[in-house]
Every structure is written in structure tokens, then in C-alpha cells.
Image (cartoon, rainbow, N blue to C red; front, side):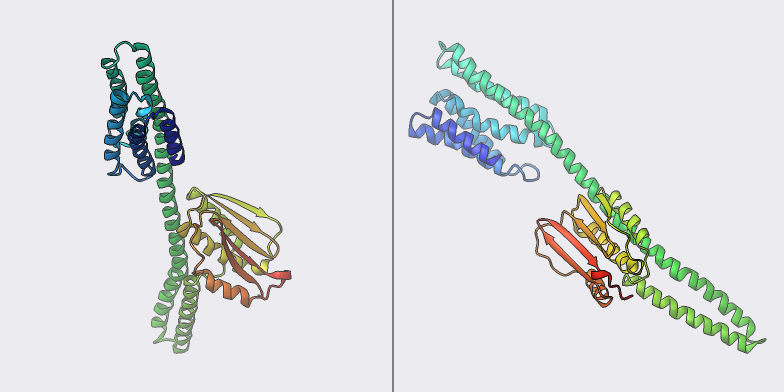
Length: 351
């Protein structure tokens, strides 16, 4: 848009300016349109817009009443049409005021050249006002589209946050499954041991040994859960990943080239869970492609940005575990896409 604004403005100056000082004045209007176009992508109405609007309006007045330059409306038409749709309120009124102002200034030339009615009405009223109506109307349509895109983006971000919350709730549920049942059993066994103290010391001692073993096992399971090392089921993780991505508004595609070796499902499930969490938290993904093969899994997503690849985060621990079991885990980042690939070459799975 900036290139088009500047190019069209330069062409109009070349066509309409007859002297160097006319070119300077018309250039001021084009410059105002150029600056307004550069700032158009900013949120809200930048401060520079008001000076641009004043300069462009002054150029149109001088061009119509002094220079006999019917293209001098270009600057005010561009600046006004760009920012009228972005006003927080009274947008339609601003657009109508813009068109009326341009038409009235053009009609005011009749006071200077009352004999050229047809030419003035055509080139100073109808053409400038008509062009402004068309451009402003198109910008209103575009603004509606941009507002819709922004609203959809906000909705997508909220859905992604909800997906992350859902993942945390699932983690809390797993933790409850591990510790809730254990604590209930421990309570019952301690109660039983208390009753057996005065009756059967040996049996009470055995009950306490079972409690200690149960607590030790629970501690180990909790550590495994905290470090994403709990035994996972790949099909369940795949279904969970699909649900999370779809809830976040991300298109997900799953391709099964072959059935995954059952000995690799635990590690691959952990890789998929960690990758899913990373995508939801750190990427602005619109699609995810998950490919399952006989020797591994690959996850490809967009929205990875252009920043250099840094630490793997939670994947670094899994990278070591996969390597210890005869496989490899690597990531690639290129052209805004992120690839996570875990595989066991030549079917070698040392689990």
C-alpha cells in the first residue's frame, strides 16, 4: 500500500504540476499520504495523522483555488479514507464529512472561474468526491475484515490458553490418580496396623512394611510424572493431542505410514506430549502434521517465528532418553516451521 500510494502520488505530480513550486506544494500532499500509509498498520490512531490530515487538506484548498490542480485532492483522500474506518466512533459521519469537504472545496472554484461550470463540476467535484467514496468504502470493508481477523485471533489465543489449562488439569488428574489412591490405601493399612499392635505384632510389622513400599513406589511415580517419564500410551496421547489442537483452533492432520513398534510407544508418547505442550505455549500455529512410521514419529507445525533455535527445554531430557534407547530425537526450525522428529534407525529399539 505504501509503494502504491507513493507511486500514484508521484505520477499525479508529474502530470498536474506545471512549475517547480506547484510540484513542491503537491508533493506535500503526497508526503502526508505516504506518512499516513506508513503509520496505518499501527494500533489506533497515531499522533502523526492529525498533522498529515491538516497538511493534505491545505494542499487541496490551495490546489483547487490557487494552483488549478485538480489532482491536489489525492493527499486528503488517502489520509481520510485510511483513518475514518479506524475511528472508535462516528466513523460514518467522518467519512461523509470527508467527502463533503472535498466536494465543497472543489465547488468553491466556481467563485474563481464561474464560466467553466462543466469542467469544474467534473474534475473538481465529481471525480475527487467519487474517488474518495470508492476508496473510503473499500477501506471500510477492509476494516471490517481486519476487525474480524483480530477478533478471531483473540479467540484463538483464548482457546490456546484453555487448551494449556486443560493439559494442566490432566496433569493434576494424573497426580491425583497416583497419590489419591495410595494415600487412601496407606490410611487403611495404618489403621489396620494400629489394631494389630496388641494382637499380632508380626502382621502389624508386615502391614507397615507394605506401607513403606507403597509410599516409595508413589514417590517414584510422582517423580516420573513430574519429569514426563511416566509410562504413556501413544494412541491415547495422539487422541489427546488432536483434541488439544482442535480446541485451540489449530488444524491437525495425522498420517499413519505404518504401525509403530510397541516397544517405542512409551518414549514416543512422551515426545508427543512434550511437543504438544510446546506448540500450545510457544508457537502461533495454524496447522500441525503428525506422521507415524514403523520406527518413529514426526510433528511439523507452523507459526514458529523467525528467532534462532535455542534450548530444547523439556525435549532435552527426552533427547537423552531416546539416545540411551538406541534412537535419536532432533528438531529443525526453518521458514517459520518447526519439526520434531523422534526415530529409532533400522528398527533398533533397546527398551
